[in-house]
Image (cartoon, rainbow, N blue to C red; front, side, top):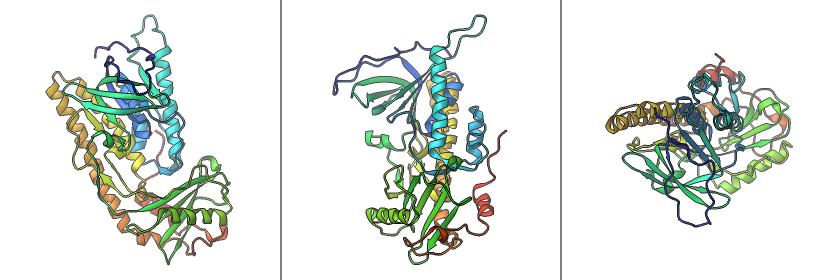
Length: 398
């Protein structure tokens, strides 16, 4: 592939509200959103020799504290990126840990590409990876040959327009506000709360309780390195609950257990499943939650986003090697259909998991929430055999 000229390292700032600039030189792929899936897509596209622009509206440090599982498919995808054991042999970790590891890798790749001089006698380095933090997407215009994307510097408001042959949408559905197809509801409402605390864990593994009157679950997990705990409050799917009241009950439980202040504000979130009605048919490839989210009870969202990201990047690389625009779009659409099929199957599995939740709930010790103490919490019998049955074997380094 012929390398395209690199755009200027910096773009002159525009006054807030000024019109977008003229398009800059073409990128092979623009990755919007640098969660785990977006980082995986950018790293895989860069490794495939594509000229990548990766943008993220937030800063470089991840803040989300949700507990996540790294499934075997995601582990295999991470191995392809040169990150064979991102969780150091553990099955569970936090999304913040995974994001920070991947963001460190993408920052290293961007730094190396822009500052490594050519080595005499060696092939020239591949196209650089351009990385922009605090940069949001404010307009997307797919065309027959490329995608015009208007970017905004979040702190200052200056805008610029770039062109990319493909756009990987890893924004979790935020581009729907810009006219992209909207995901449709695919499951019942399900209010959950999760928060991280710096109180050291006094337990091993996972402990929790269930309230037989309300059918609510309260679980505690040790964080990475046992530096704190993550609390997870799960309510029955479909229940009509007030989020603010639920958050106050959650905080009351934390007070009973002397967990201290949470690292992030406590908020009840409706994690009902959503999914696109059909695969993308243009040069915008949604991945992860932008295609569809699955219920947190299934524990697959981050893993599938990583798999999607690598799949999308390799699909884009294969498409751009085709000799005609028609063949390029055929490969692009096949990649989108493959990612969509993964999420359609996952949506069905998520609804099945919610259907069997009453059975899973009964495995935990009983208590009345929020009036519990540390001695009320305990593990259910056969916890880890059940986890292995549901989620597969623990990821292993290769």
